[in-house]
Image (cartoon, rainbow, N blue to C red; front, side, top):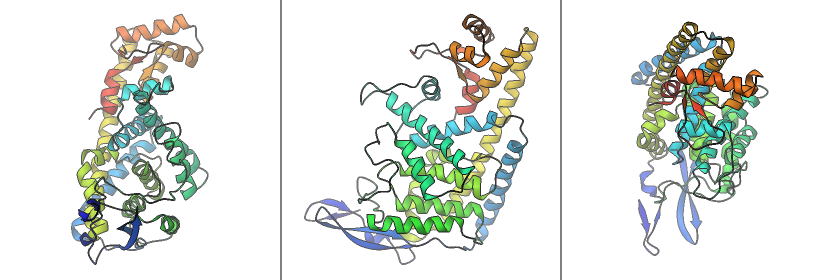
Length: 394
């Protein structure tokens, strides 16, 4: 980092940006001090894939195709999709320092409530829940129109509504300068350059290009994070948009691939490689990293799905041996989509009396499929621990 000798405050080190950097430095003034912002140039419409990348690219395409193939022919695709989406919400949020357990997220989905103070952990639960809502909103909008800046603004508005970032202008692109890192390691474009950069990026997403779709998506993710178009929530919106782009551009049957768990696992590498694209034009290492993530997360999703299917078969066989009924089978299937339930929720779901619903749930408790939560909540909530472990565990 560099320091302003008069004020002893860090400024962005422009000497790190070499001639091959894919953008230009622009002098700015922040509180009367000179600093530098980086304005990325338009993304390339063609890019030569190196020999070392070809093997990764082929494997990433194959693993993604396997995942899509399994999901495409599933009778109930939500058995795989819902856990993947909730896990994405949890891991993308944890990358930004917002933490919730799967149990807390599921509890909040069933019984949303307002936080009682700024320190109430419910704030974090709601932020993670908002990510899930933003993803569902985006998917419903994508059914009617392609990815656009307006859709991205809608995602951002949903993400920050009613939570700690709600004062950060939800749904609007920034009109002031921001910086990344307490040491001002990276400074995105000045506010007057944000819309020109975004307009160019939107056109790039939809233009014909010779690039492999996966590589194009990874380049767009870099560009979005570099532009940093919002005052807050850029990382979460960018990772959500990445999943949507892979779904749309790679023509998947559903949005199966989510990379936040991989980015979270290798957080320092994720941040440093984004920075190295800006400073050195190091696309190769960034794209290799993302391709490794595609391979790892595709395999991980398939492995979780295989384990969930085996567990479902065990549960159904157990019900058959213990005199199960259609309601219990329906409850078990519900638990694989959302491994948490209350008696009232099950009563409403099946249109049955409360006492009947409670008796059914107790049968699953006695069968060790459900356990009563130790989270203090009203009404009582029951979790399926084996499903939780497979769907959300490390």
